[in-house]
Image: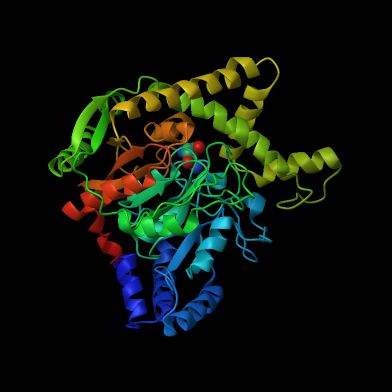
Length: 484
Ligand code: GLN
Protein backbone atom coordinates (compact mmCIF):
# COMPACT_ATOMS: atom_id res chain seq x y z
CA UNK A 1 0.00 0.00 0.00
CA UNK A 2 2.91 2.37 0.65
CA UNK A 3 4.01 2.31 -3.00
CA UNK A 4 0.65 3.16 -4.51
CA UNK A 5 -0.39 6.50 -5.94
CA UNK A 6 -2.98 8.59 -4.09
CA UNK A 7 -5.44 7.94 -6.95
CA UNK A 8 -4.92 4.17 -6.56
CA UNK A 9 -5.38 4.41 -2.79
CA UNK A 10 -8.54 6.47 -3.25
CA UNK A 11 -9.86 3.90 -5.70
CA UNK A 12 -9.11 1.05 -3.28
CA UNK A 13 -10.86 2.94 -0.48
CA UNK A 14 -13.86 3.79 -2.62
CA UNK A 15 -14.23 0.17 -3.70
CA UNK A 16 -13.76 -0.81 -0.04
CA UNK A 17 -10.89 -3.17 -0.98
CA UNK A 18 -9.38 -1.87 2.24
CA UNK A 19 -10.57 0.59 4.85
CA UNK A 20 -8.99 3.86 5.90
CA UNK A 21 -8.37 2.18 9.24
CA UNK A 22 -6.35 -0.61 7.57
CA UNK A 23 -4.46 1.89 5.48
CA UNK A 24 -3.73 4.06 8.53
CA UNK A 25 -2.61 1.04 10.55
CA UNK A 26 -0.32 0.01 7.71
CA UNK A 27 1.49 3.35 7.84
CA UNK A 28 1.52 3.49 11.66
CA UNK A 29 3.07 0.02 11.62
CA UNK A 30 5.78 1.13 9.21
CA UNK A 31 6.51 4.21 11.32
CA UNK A 32 6.84 1.99 14.35
CA UNK A 33 9.17 -0.40 12.59
CA UNK A 34 11.32 1.92 10.49
CA UNK A 35 11.34 5.40 11.96
CA UNK A 36 13.70 4.58 14.78
CA UNK A 37 16.44 4.61 12.19
CA UNK A 38 15.15 7.47 10.03
CA UNK A 39 13.88 9.94 12.66
CA UNK A 40 11.33 11.55 10.35
CA UNK A 41 8.48 11.87 12.89
CA UNK A 42 8.67 14.10 15.94
CA UNK A 43 5.15 13.30 17.12
CA UNK A 44 2.99 10.37 16.02
CA UNK A 45 -0.73 10.99 16.55
CA UNK A 46 -1.90 7.38 16.31
CA UNK A 47 -5.06 7.78 18.36
CA UNK A 48 -6.28 10.83 16.50
CA UNK A 49 -5.36 9.16 13.19
CA UNK A 50 -7.52 6.15 13.98
CA UNK A 51 -10.42 8.44 14.95
CA UNK A 52 -10.08 10.36 11.69
CA UNK A 53 -9.85 7.06 9.79
CA UNK A 54 -13.06 5.85 11.44
CA UNK A 55 -14.82 9.06 10.41
CA UNK A 56 -13.50 8.66 6.87
CA UNK A 57 -14.65 5.05 6.74
CA UNK A 58 -18.13 6.09 7.82
CA UNK A 59 -18.27 8.55 4.91
CA UNK A 60 -16.82 6.06 2.45
CA UNK A 61 -19.28 3.37 3.55
CA UNK A 62 -22.10 5.69 2.54
CA UNK A 63 -20.46 6.34 -0.82
CA UNK A 64 -19.53 9.86 0.27
CA UNK A 65 -16.20 11.67 0.43
CA UNK A 66 -13.79 13.08 -2.12
CA UNK A 67 -10.52 12.03 -3.74
CA UNK A 68 -8.53 12.38 -0.49
CA UNK A 69 -11.02 10.98 2.02
CA UNK A 70 -9.38 8.35 4.19
CA UNK A 71 -5.85 8.94 2.88
CA UNK A 72 -3.18 9.47 5.55
CA UNK A 73 -0.62 12.27 5.51
CA UNK A 74 2.09 13.82 7.68
CA UNK A 75 2.34 17.53 8.51
CA UNK A 76 5.59 19.42 8.79
CA UNK A 77 5.88 20.33 12.45
CA UNK A 78 5.35 24.04 11.89
CA UNK A 79 1.67 23.81 10.99
CA UNK A 80 -0.40 24.35 14.10
CA UNK A 81 -2.51 21.32 14.98
CA UNK A 82 -5.05 21.91 17.72
CA UNK A 83 -4.27 19.95 20.86
CA UNK A 84 -1.08 18.50 19.36
CA UNK A 85 2.46 19.72 19.97
CA UNK A 86 3.81 21.99 17.23
CA UNK A 87 7.52 22.26 18.01
CA UNK A 88 9.01 23.64 14.78
CA UNK A 89 12.23 21.69 15.39
CA UNK A 90 12.98 23.92 18.37
CA UNK A 91 13.49 23.59 22.08
CA UNK A 92 11.70 26.95 22.21
CA UNK A 93 8.42 25.29 21.20
CA UNK A 94 9.04 21.83 22.60
CA UNK A 95 6.24 22.40 25.13
CA UNK A 96 3.88 24.24 22.76
CA UNK A 97 0.49 22.63 22.24
CA UNK A 98 -1.21 24.56 19.46
CA UNK A 99 -4.59 25.97 20.53
CA UNK A 100 -5.90 26.08 16.93
CA UNK A 101 -5.40 24.51 13.50
CA UNK A 102 -3.54 26.09 10.61
CA UNK A 103 -5.76 26.91 7.63
CA UNK A 104 -4.26 24.10 5.56
CA UNK A 105 -4.80 21.62 8.41
CA UNK A 106 -8.47 22.65 8.53
CA UNK A 107 -8.79 22.21 4.78
CA UNK A 108 -7.05 18.82 4.62
CA UNK A 109 -9.04 17.58 7.64
CA UNK A 110 -12.21 18.69 5.89
CA UNK A 111 -11.12 16.79 2.79
CA UNK A 112 -11.11 13.70 4.99
CA UNK A 113 -7.35 13.18 5.23
CA UNK A 114 -5.92 11.34 8.22
CA UNK A 115 -3.04 12.97 10.13
CA UNK A 116 -0.41 10.36 11.05
CA UNK A 117 1.73 12.86 12.90
CA UNK A 118 4.12 15.79 12.76
CA UNK A 119 7.44 15.49 10.97
CA UNK A 120 10.92 16.81 11.66
CA UNK A 121 12.48 19.93 10.21
CA UNK A 122 15.37 22.32 10.66
CA UNK A 123 14.77 24.58 13.62
CA UNK A 124 12.28 27.26 12.53
CA UNK A 125 12.84 25.98 8.96
CA UNK A 126 16.33 27.49 8.90
CA UNK A 127 18.61 25.08 7.12
CA UNK A 128 19.11 22.79 4.17
CA UNK A 129 19.75 19.48 5.90
CA UNK A 130 17.37 18.99 8.86
CA UNK A 131 20.45 18.87 11.09
CA UNK A 132 19.56 22.00 13.08
CA UNK A 133 16.50 20.31 14.60
CA UNK A 134 16.32 20.06 18.39
CA UNK A 135 15.11 16.49 17.78
CA UNK A 136 18.25 15.38 15.96
CA UNK A 137 18.90 14.85 12.26
CA UNK A 138 16.55 13.00 9.94
CA UNK A 139 18.26 10.42 7.70
CA UNK A 140 17.95 10.11 3.95
CA UNK A 141 16.35 6.73 3.15
CA UNK A 142 18.53 6.38 0.04
CA UNK A 143 21.62 6.40 2.27
CA UNK A 144 21.14 6.86 6.00
CA UNK A 145 24.61 8.42 6.37
CA UNK A 146 23.35 11.34 4.29
CA UNK A 147 20.97 14.24 4.86
CA UNK A 148 17.50 14.32 3.30
CA UNK A 149 17.87 18.03 2.59
CA UNK A 150 16.03 20.64 4.53
CA UNK A 151 14.31 22.23 6.05
CA UNK A 152 11.55 19.77 5.07
CA UNK A 153 13.66 16.67 5.76
CA UNK A 154 11.05 14.95 7.90
CA UNK A 155 8.36 15.45 5.23
CA UNK A 156 10.47 14.02 2.41
CA UNK A 157 11.97 11.12 4.35
CA UNK A 158 8.53 10.07 5.59
CA UNK A 159 7.18 10.02 2.03
CA UNK A 160 10.28 8.62 0.30
CA UNK A 161 10.53 5.72 2.77
CA UNK A 162 6.81 4.95 2.67
CA UNK A 163 6.00 6.16 6.19
CA UNK A 164 3.30 8.47 4.78
CA UNK A 165 1.79 8.56 1.30
CA UNK A 166 2.18 12.34 1.08
CA UNK A 167 3.23 15.23 3.35
CA UNK A 168 2.87 18.95 3.72
CA UNK A 169 5.98 21.11 3.73
CA UNK A 170 7.06 24.73 3.44
CA UNK A 171 9.50 26.62 1.28
CA UNK A 172 11.07 29.96 2.23
CA UNK A 173 14.18 29.62 0.07
CA UNK A 174 14.00 26.10 -1.30
CA UNK A 175 12.95 23.77 1.50
CA UNK A 176 10.32 21.92 -0.49
CA UNK A 177 12.30 21.65 -3.71
CA UNK A 178 15.80 20.94 -2.36
CA UNK A 179 14.48 18.29 0.06
CA UNK A 180 12.35 16.70 -2.68
CA UNK A 181 15.34 16.65 -5.05
CA UNK A 182 17.63 14.89 -2.58
CA UNK A 183 15.08 12.16 -1.86
CA UNK A 184 13.62 11.49 -5.32
CA UNK A 185 10.24 13.17 -4.76
CA UNK A 186 8.07 15.71 -6.51
CA UNK A 187 7.61 18.83 -4.42
CA UNK A 188 5.77 22.02 -5.29
CA UNK A 189 5.94 25.47 -3.77
CA UNK A 190 2.95 27.40 -5.08
CA UNK A 191 2.78 31.10 -5.87
CA UNK A 192 3.20 33.34 -2.83
CA UNK A 193 -0.33 34.03 -1.62
CA UNK A 194 -1.93 30.90 -3.12
CA UNK A 195 -1.98 29.02 0.19
CA UNK A 196 -2.79 30.67 3.51
CA UNK A 197 0.02 31.10 6.02
CA UNK A 198 -2.45 31.24 8.91
CA UNK A 199 -1.29 28.88 11.63
CA UNK A 200 2.08 28.27 10.00
CA UNK A 201 4.94 29.26 12.32
CA UNK A 202 6.51 32.32 10.68
CA UNK A 203 10.13 32.39 9.55
CA UNK A 204 10.34 35.07 6.81
CA UNK A 205 6.80 36.17 6.07
CA UNK A 206 7.35 37.66 2.60
CA UNK A 207 8.95 34.40 1.41
CA UNK A 208 7.27 31.57 3.38
CA UNK A 209 4.88 29.43 1.40
CA UNK A 210 3.27 26.08 2.17
CA UNK A 211 3.20 23.26 -0.35
CA UNK A 212 3.39 19.52 -0.69
CA UNK A 213 5.88 16.69 -1.28
CA UNK A 214 4.68 13.53 -3.00
CA UNK A 215 5.76 10.63 -5.19
CA UNK A 216 4.40 12.24 -8.35
CA UNK A 217 3.01 15.42 -9.84
CA UNK A 218 -0.42 13.76 -9.97
CA UNK A 219 -0.34 13.09 -6.21
CA UNK A 220 0.93 16.61 -5.48
CA UNK A 221 -1.83 18.13 -7.63
CA UNK A 222 -4.57 16.49 -5.56
CA UNK A 223 -3.24 17.73 -2.23
CA UNK A 224 -2.23 21.19 -3.43
CA UNK A 225 -5.72 21.68 -4.76
CA UNK A 226 -7.25 20.79 -1.40
CA UNK A 227 -4.94 23.09 0.60
CA UNK A 228 -5.19 26.14 -1.68
CA UNK A 229 -7.72 28.89 -1.39
CA UNK A 230 -8.53 32.25 0.09
CA UNK A 231 -8.31 32.83 3.81
CA UNK A 232 -9.02 36.30 5.20
CA UNK A 233 -6.80 35.53 8.22
CA UNK A 234 -3.67 35.86 6.07
CA UNK A 235 -3.57 39.36 4.60
CA UNK A 236 -1.24 38.24 1.80
CA UNK A 237 -3.49 35.36 0.74
CA UNK A 238 -4.91 36.08 -2.69
CA UNK A 239 -8.65 36.00 -3.32
CA UNK A 240 -8.72 34.07 -6.54
CA UNK A 241 -10.40 30.81 -7.51
CA UNK A 242 -8.25 27.68 -7.29
CA UNK A 243 -7.52 26.06 -10.64
CA UNK A 244 -8.39 22.42 -11.20
CA UNK A 245 -4.81 21.12 -10.96
CA UNK A 246 -5.75 17.46 -11.11
CA UNK A 247 -8.12 18.03 -14.03
CA UNK A 248 -5.46 19.96 -15.97
CA UNK A 249 -2.73 17.33 -15.65
CA UNK A 250 -3.25 16.06 -19.16
CA UNK A 251 -2.82 19.39 -20.92
CA UNK A 252 -0.23 18.76 -23.62
CA UNK A 253 3.41 19.73 -23.48
CA UNK A 254 3.38 20.27 -27.25
CA UNK A 255 4.13 23.90 -27.95
CA UNK A 256 5.32 24.62 -24.40
CA UNK A 257 8.25 27.04 -24.45
CA UNK A 258 10.82 25.89 -21.90
CA UNK A 259 13.51 28.40 -20.94
CA UNK A 260 16.96 27.15 -19.95
CA UNK A 261 18.74 29.89 -17.98
CA UNK A 262 22.46 30.05 -18.78
CA UNK A 263 23.19 31.00 -15.15
CA UNK A 264 21.66 27.74 -13.85
CA UNK A 265 24.01 25.59 -15.91
CA UNK A 266 27.19 27.48 -15.05
CA UNK A 267 30.15 26.76 -12.78
CA UNK A 268 29.42 24.92 -9.56
CA UNK A 269 26.92 22.49 -11.06
CA UNK A 270 27.99 18.84 -10.85
CA UNK A 271 28.48 17.75 -14.50
CA UNK A 272 26.50 14.56 -13.90
CA UNK A 273 23.57 16.55 -12.46
CA UNK A 274 23.82 18.83 -15.45
CA UNK A 275 23.62 15.84 -17.80
CA UNK A 276 20.54 14.49 -16.00
CA UNK A 277 18.75 17.85 -16.20
CA UNK A 278 19.71 18.24 -19.86
CA UNK A 279 18.28 14.78 -20.51
CA UNK A 280 15.02 15.93 -18.85
CA UNK A 281 15.01 18.96 -21.15
CA UNK A 282 15.52 16.65 -24.14
CA UNK A 283 12.63 14.47 -22.98
CA UNK A 284 10.32 17.51 -22.80
CA UNK A 285 11.50 18.47 -26.28
CA UNK A 286 10.62 14.98 -27.50
CA UNK A 287 7.15 15.52 -26.07
CA UNK A 288 6.81 18.61 -28.24
CA UNK A 289 8.21 21.41 -26.09
CA UNK A 290 10.53 24.04 -27.53
CA UNK A 291 13.77 24.71 -25.65
CA UNK A 292 14.75 28.36 -25.47
CA UNK A 293 18.08 29.60 -24.06
CA UNK A 294 17.38 32.48 -21.66
CA UNK A 295 19.22 34.62 -19.17
CA UNK A 296 18.52 35.55 -15.57
CA UNK A 297 21.47 37.89 -15.15
CA UNK A 298 20.84 38.81 -11.53
CA UNK A 299 20.62 35.23 -10.26
CA UNK A 300 24.10 35.28 -8.69
CA UNK A 301 22.70 37.94 -6.33
CA UNK A 302 19.83 35.81 -5.06
CA UNK A 303 21.65 34.05 -2.19
CA UNK A 304 23.18 37.24 -0.73
CA UNK A 305 19.86 39.07 -1.12
CA UNK A 306 17.97 36.28 0.63
CA UNK A 307 20.46 36.19 3.50
CA UNK A 308 19.66 39.83 4.24
CA UNK A 309 15.89 39.74 3.72
CA UNK A 310 15.14 36.38 5.38
CA UNK A 311 17.13 37.00 8.59
CA UNK A 312 15.68 40.54 8.82
CA UNK A 313 12.16 39.16 8.78
CA UNK A 314 13.13 36.27 11.04
CA UNK A 315 14.61 38.59 13.66
CA UNK A 316 11.33 40.45 13.76
CA UNK A 317 9.10 37.34 13.71
CA UNK A 318 11.11 35.54 16.39
CA UNK A 319 11.02 38.46 18.81
CA UNK A 320 7.70 37.04 20.05
CA UNK A 321 9.54 34.20 21.82
CA UNK A 322 10.40 36.03 24.99
CA UNK A 323 9.90 33.39 27.68
CA UNK A 324 6.81 35.25 28.90
CA UNK A 325 3.85 34.33 26.75
CA UNK A 326 4.45 30.78 25.62
CA UNK A 327 7.30 28.46 24.72
CA UNK A 328 10.50 27.80 26.62
CA UNK A 329 11.22 29.70 29.84
CA UNK A 330 14.57 29.47 31.62
CA UNK A 331 14.69 28.26 35.21
CA UNK A 332 14.82 30.76 38.09
CA UNK A 333 15.28 34.05 36.22
CA UNK A 334 16.98 36.72 38.35
CA UNK A 335 15.06 39.58 36.69
CA UNK A 336 13.22 40.42 33.46
CA UNK A 337 16.37 40.93 31.40
CA UNK A 338 17.80 37.65 32.62
CA UNK A 339 14.50 35.97 31.72
CA UNK A 340 14.65 37.27 28.14
CA UNK A 341 18.33 36.55 27.69
CA UNK A 342 18.43 33.05 29.06
CA UNK A 343 15.06 31.95 27.66
CA UNK A 344 16.15 32.96 24.16
CA UNK A 345 19.76 31.86 24.62
CA UNK A 346 18.76 28.41 25.86
CA UNK A 347 15.59 28.00 23.76
CA UNK A 348 17.07 28.81 20.34
CA UNK A 349 19.83 26.79 18.67
CA UNK A 350 22.98 28.27 17.09
CA UNK A 351 21.68 28.71 13.54
CA UNK A 352 18.54 30.50 14.71
CA UNK A 353 20.62 32.80 16.93
CA UNK A 354 22.95 33.51 13.99
CA UNK A 355 19.96 34.53 11.84
CA UNK A 356 18.52 36.74 14.57
CA UNK A 357 21.86 38.50 14.95
CA UNK A 358 22.30 39.01 11.18
CA UNK A 359 18.72 40.24 10.89
CA UNK A 360 19.04 42.65 13.79
CA UNK A 361 22.28 43.98 12.32
CA UNK A 362 20.94 44.62 8.82
CA UNK A 363 17.89 46.40 10.22
CA UNK A 364 19.79 48.57 12.66
CA UNK A 365 20.31 52.29 12.29
CA UNK A 366 23.25 52.98 9.99
CA UNK A 367 23.12 49.59 8.29
CA UNK A 368 19.50 49.56 7.17
CA UNK A 369 20.25 51.62 4.03
CA UNK A 370 23.43 49.73 3.24
CA UNK A 371 21.97 46.24 3.55
CA UNK A 372 18.24 45.91 3.94
CA UNK A 373 17.21 48.65 1.52
CA UNK A 374 19.80 47.49 -1.04
CA UNK A 375 18.56 43.93 -0.75
CA UNK A 376 14.98 45.04 -1.38
CA UNK A 377 16.12 46.80 -4.55
CA UNK A 378 18.05 43.77 -5.79
CA UNK A 379 15.02 41.62 -5.01
CA UNK A 380 13.11 43.77 -7.50
CA UNK A 381 15.83 43.27 -10.14
CA UNK A 382 15.62 39.51 -9.65
CA UNK A 383 11.83 39.62 -10.08
CA UNK A 384 12.30 41.76 -13.23
CA UNK A 385 14.62 39.12 -14.72
CA UNK A 386 11.81 36.59 -14.46
CA UNK A 387 9.23 39.02 -15.83
CA UNK A 388 11.39 39.53 -18.92
CA UNK A 389 12.13 35.81 -19.29
CA UNK A 390 8.43 34.98 -19.14
CA UNK A 391 7.83 37.23 -22.15
CA UNK A 392 9.71 34.58 -24.16
CA UNK A 393 8.92 31.31 -22.36
CA UNK A 394 6.11 29.58 -20.47
CA UNK A 395 8.22 27.74 -17.89
CA UNK A 396 11.86 27.71 -16.82
CA UNK A 397 13.80 24.47 -16.39
CA UNK A 398 17.04 24.00 -14.48
CA UNK A 399 18.65 21.91 -11.78
CA UNK A 400 17.18 22.03 -8.27
CA UNK A 401 20.55 21.57 -6.55
CA UNK A 402 24.19 21.55 -7.56
CA UNK A 403 24.78 17.97 -6.42
CA UNK A 404 23.15 15.00 -4.69
CA UNK A 405 22.58 14.45 -0.94
CA UNK A 406 25.65 15.22 1.18
CA UNK A 407 26.83 13.43 4.30
CA UNK A 408 25.44 14.14 7.75
CA UNK A 409 27.85 16.51 9.50
CA UNK A 410 29.65 17.43 6.28
CA UNK A 411 28.46 21.04 6.09
CA UNK A 412 27.41 21.82 9.65
CA UNK A 413 30.55 23.82 10.46
CA UNK A 414 30.32 25.88 7.32
CA UNK A 415 27.13 27.98 7.17
CA UNK A 416 28.06 29.66 3.90
CA UNK A 417 28.45 26.33 2.07
CA UNK A 418 25.15 25.27 3.62
CA UNK A 419 23.49 28.49 2.38
CA UNK A 420 24.68 27.79 -1.17
CA UNK A 421 22.50 24.67 -1.32
CA UNK A 422 19.65 26.96 -2.34
CA UNK A 423 21.47 28.75 -5.13
CA UNK A 424 18.90 27.69 -7.77
CA UNK A 425 15.79 27.76 -5.61
CA UNK A 426 15.88 31.07 -3.71
CA UNK A 427 15.12 33.35 -6.65
CA UNK A 428 11.61 31.89 -7.05
CA UNK A 429 10.84 32.81 -3.42
CA UNK A 430 12.21 36.33 -3.84
CA UNK A 431 9.96 36.75 -6.90
CA UNK A 432 6.97 34.92 -5.36
CA UNK A 433 6.81 32.46 -8.27
CA UNK A 434 5.56 28.87 -8.18
CA UNK A 435 8.27 26.23 -8.60
CA UNK A 436 8.47 22.47 -8.55
CA UNK A 437 11.19 19.86 -8.28
CA UNK A 438 10.84 16.44 -9.91
CA UNK A 439 13.21 13.48 -9.96
CA UNK A 440 15.15 13.22 -13.24
CA UNK A 441 17.92 10.71 -12.59
CA UNK A 442 20.03 8.70 -10.17
CA UNK A 443 23.72 9.23 -9.47
CA UNK A 444 25.59 6.58 -7.49
CA UNK A 445 22.32 5.44 -5.95
CA UNK A 446 21.18 8.97 -5.05
CA UNK A 447 18.31 10.90 -6.66
CA UNK A 448 18.77 14.02 -8.81
CA UNK A 449 16.09 16.69 -9.20
CA UNK A 450 15.09 19.05 -11.98
CA UNK A 451 13.31 22.30 -11.21
CA UNK A 452 10.48 23.94 -13.13
CA UNK A 453 9.64 27.58 -12.35
CA UNK A 454 6.42 29.11 -13.62
CA UNK A 455 4.57 32.39 -13.94
CA UNK A 456 2.50 33.60 -11.01
CA UNK A 457 -0.47 31.25 -10.43
CA UNK A 458 0.69 28.89 -13.18
CA UNK A 459 1.16 25.92 -10.84
CA UNK A 460 -1.31 23.94 -12.98
CA UNK A 461 1.02 24.18 -15.93
CA UNK A 462 4.06 23.15 -13.86
CA UNK A 463 2.22 20.10 -12.57
CA UNK A 464 1.02 19.19 -16.06
CA UNK A 465 4.54 19.46 -17.51
CA UNK A 466 5.93 17.31 -14.69
CA UNK A 467 3.08 14.85 -15.15
CA UNK A 468 3.77 14.54 -18.88
CA UNK A 469 7.45 13.94 -18.08
CA UNK A 470 6.49 11.32 -15.49
CA UNK A 471 4.25 9.54 -17.99
CA UNK A 472 7.28 9.19 -20.25
CA UNK A 473 9.91 8.31 -17.60
CA UNK A 474 10.09 6.23 -14.43
CA UNK A 475 12.45 8.14 -12.12
CA UNK A 476 9.55 9.02 -9.84
CA UNK A 477 8.70 5.34 -9.31
CA UNK A 478 12.06 4.44 -7.72
CA UNK A 479 11.86 3.40 -4.08
CA UNK A 480 14.79 3.11 -1.66
CA UNK A 481 15.41 -0.66 -1.49
CA UNK A 482 16.27 -0.79 2.21
CA UNK A 483 12.77 0.46 3.10
CA UNK A 484 10.71 -1.49 0.58
N1 GLN B 1 17.93 26.77 3.30
C1 GLN B 1 17.26 28.03 3.36
C2 GLN B 1 17.45 28.64 4.74
O1 GLN B 1 18.13 28.08 5.50
C3 GLN B 1 15.81 27.89 3.04
C4 GLN B 1 15.03 27.17 4.07
C5 GLN B 1 13.57 27.14 3.78
O2 GLN B 1 13.15 27.21 2.62
N2 GLN B 1 12.79 27.05 4.82
O3 GLN B 1 16.93 29.64 5.05
